[in-house]
Every structure is written in C-alpha cells, then in structure tokens.
Length: 251
Image (cartoon, rainbow, N blue to C red; front, top):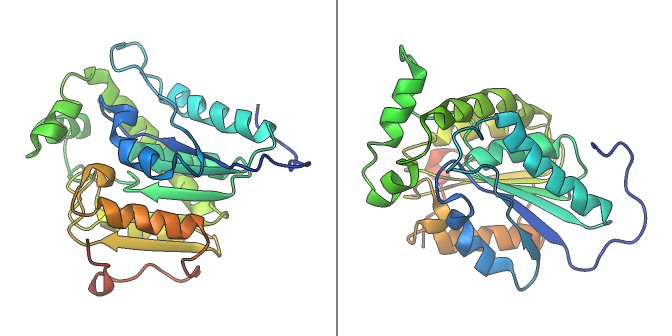
C-alpha cells in the first residue's frame, strides 16, 4: 500500500539504508563493499528482487514492487529511510523515490539507457549478446546462466521506470564511471539534467567501470563520496552535471 499521508511521530535514531541491486546472478553480492562501509552507522537492507533460478519469476512489476514494499514497511516504522540503487536497481529506486517520502536517494550507474542497444534490429538479441560477451570473466559469470526471458524483463523495467527520473524531488546523489561499458555515462547526464530536485549532485568517476563497488581502482572514492553525501558535507546544487573536463579523479 502506497503511503498517502506524511508520516508523523518520532523516528528511530538509527537510520536505514535500503539499497537495490542490479541485474545479474550475484544480485546483492555486488553490494558487499557498500554494506561493509556503512553497516556500523546505518541499518542496511538489500532485498533480493528476483530469483535467478526461477525462469517464471520474470515479472518486472513484481521485481519493483518487492523493493517498494520493503521501503513502505520501514517508513511505517517511522524510520528515516535513505534509498539507493545500482544499475537496474537505480531505475527502480528512482520510481520509488517519486512515490514515498525517502530522505535521500543514491544512484550508482543507474541503467536509464543500456549501451549498444540503439539502432539495432533486435534489441533483445543485442542485449543478450552484449552481456554474454563482456571482457571481464567476472562479469560474464554474473550474466551467464540467467533465464533468457529475464533479459526481456530487464528491458521492460528500464523502459517502464526510467521516465520517473524527471519527477525526482528529494535530494539525490548520482555516481557513474567514465568507462562504464554497460550503461553509458551520458544517459546519467541526461537523466540528471531532467531531475527537478533542487538538491542534487552528480560525479563522473574517471576510469570507473560499471560495478563501482567491485571496481578496486575507484571503489574507495565512490564510498567516500557517498559518506560525504550522507553526512551533508557535499555542496548541494541545482545546476546541470559537470562536464567531462572536470571529472573527478579516481583513487
């Protein structure tokens, strides 16, 4: 049930971060570095959005609603909820942030537009080919073995929920890697520019790849930026995202 009225009453002292995983067999396994970095200061919830062993679990609306229900449950406890999402999870998180009163939104490599899918005769075939011919053995293992119909579900989720980025009014931090080979950083620039929030900030991480929390070269920088954001130490602005010439350098 969508919360219709602003929540009243005292909130729990310890805030909760609900972080949504991306598309792949590892699911929340890709978020371990994030969990370890913040679990001492926050309650961390990372719901599993789908079952990679069940080909029938291919309803994108159900995937999104599983996340929505977790956020609703915590808000009903009068808790301060910070919502985050990686890749596909970032698209779903953007949708939820337009429906529920979350305190802040964190998006890492949100999949507002999947790379190499434009101007192709068969988008689904192109997507499967791209995900199963990646250079990194780790990435290949994460996508191989998923039910084939899940790739169509991914497309459906992205198409259905990405328009909600233009309705985000809560504070938002968006982080994307400049070398992301799965989701173009330009898609984040475009989405960020459309976000009406007066409190937003975007960072393009130089040499960062798609799974930022497993990218050892840039992960410390990404976590540091998120911590600064959570502690209200990053200067909030309502301007368009910084151009490539001023990208942050990786650790």
